[in-house]
Length: 231
Image (cartoon, rainbow, N blue to C red; front, side):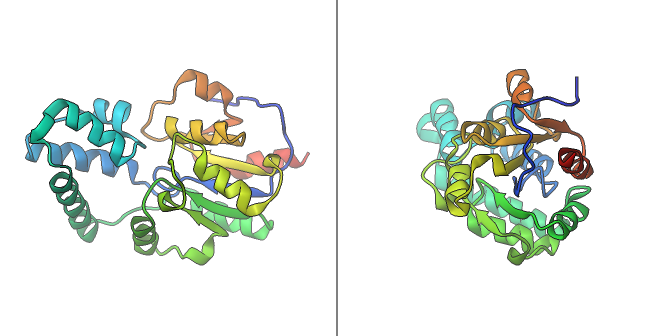
């Protein structure tokens, strides 16, 4: 059931950390379709279900491992990723990336209420900056942006969130992470941060959903959650 799930602490947070793809930006479904289409073009077909279950939120290294086992010496990593990147960039030149419903309103609310906000993403810094620029968001809109270059391991490992905790130097109870995927939720939970799960294309595992502080369908609900925590 999609609803409220509890965690021990209900202390009002000071810092809200957002995943980028699938939380701030409506890009996860785009990545899915682009990889399915591109793989079909290069005779490496995958299904949408396979992508969600195996590739969503995963690193290039993880995906390469699958391809190397399946295609062995026939798989050229550089050629594959160069081609997919160009395919993605060509798409973004012709199609507008959308900000997720409710994010701009939530961002303004958080700024007005003096919350600190950040982006925690497994994307590269280059892609992150490109995507933010595309939708008109500025780096100055965020108090911290942590990307895969800043850590040794990306999601589902907790390194990105641990980096944020160390940066702000405050107790972990002061944080809430907003994540849409299994790997993102796992990363935040393993860093002992409360998680709000925003529904997107990933099917979150029941055991992870149960551990989330709240589960929501739109970002507008975050405002209500924070207001209720004041009481």
